[in-house]
Length: 118
Length: 116
Image (cartoon, rainbow over all chains, first blue to last red; front, side, top):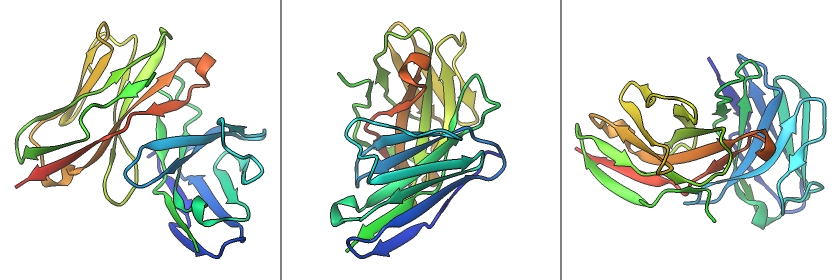
């Protein structure tokens, strides 16, 4: 149980293009999903909290117009990196919380997406 | 101030031996949760163990146990009988209460390399 998928796992794109990353909870419903960014040899940094049916909450310093988040269903959240630039190259990883887990509220992570912007 | 501190950037452990990974945290919220995750080179984050701030007993999950010392604000992970597959980055994380948005804050991580 508690499987989260992420697609694509790898993406290489040209500067100026937009990239969409999907995060799906496969065997549970997630009212809340999270998007993180991780640079090499560093820890995870939370970018935004995505709530089903409402606007995402972005962390300080994260441009909401650049990183568009949509959480249209209880099993799917998407992150779109708009007009990507080389500095956006990173490892993006999502997590989801099972809405029935009201005690631990464990976050289960997807396998991550490596983005390289040329 | 750092909310989650992992002071060991890296460590070696002999196969079949136990290893303790340090984690200290800082919060004024009486209700919080502490998590440990494993990140192998593939990048996925694997949930290992959870400790709630009100839990009376230390959490255990198979070869993983959490040494929870609330007064010291520490939540060290103990891996017993290390295996080669345990080589990975390990992250300690804290979830504070609703006032903090129930978000996870991660420590800097500890890289473990198990030697045969």
